[in-house]
Amino acid sequence: MKISTKGRYGLTIMIELARKFGDGPISLKQIARDKKLSEHYLEQLASPLRNAGLVKSVRGAYGGYILAKEPDEITAGDIIRVLEGPITLVEGIEEEEPAKQALWLRVRDAVKDVLDTTTLSDLKNHENDQQQEPYMFYI
Image 1: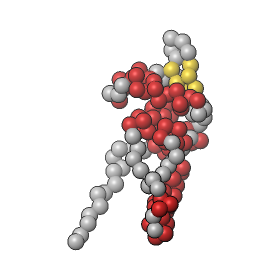
Image 2: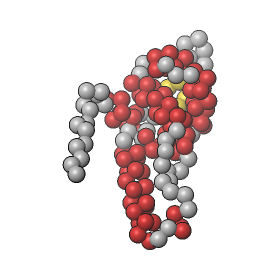
Image 3: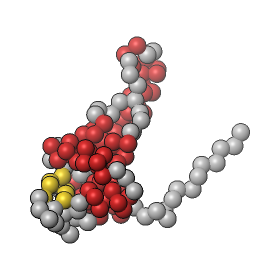
Image 4: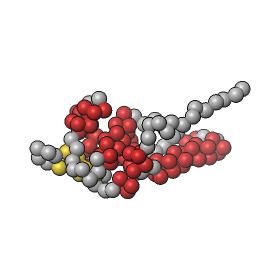
């Protein structure tokens, strides 16, 4: 499974909207400027997020986007599915031998579980200094 820039930038938009939740609309121009991303690309991502009912657009001079629900009601899985499609790991899994099929299904289910249990509240509150210690492999 590979998350493209659509999914990554879509999460960026949604996390920024979650951080400002309750403060009024935020423009994509501001998010693009703050995160050094293409405003045009963010505009393309906002449409499917709006159509899926995850964000609302606000017109006017002080317009922009707001979350359509509370940050703890929107999961990373909701966003990824809208922008990337269904969560799958391997194409043509039906042709794999049963042991590999079972492995790929377990991995897929674990990825789904992480995405579906991680909310925008979790992501907006995550501190950068809580970095996980790197794994050490001994051979």
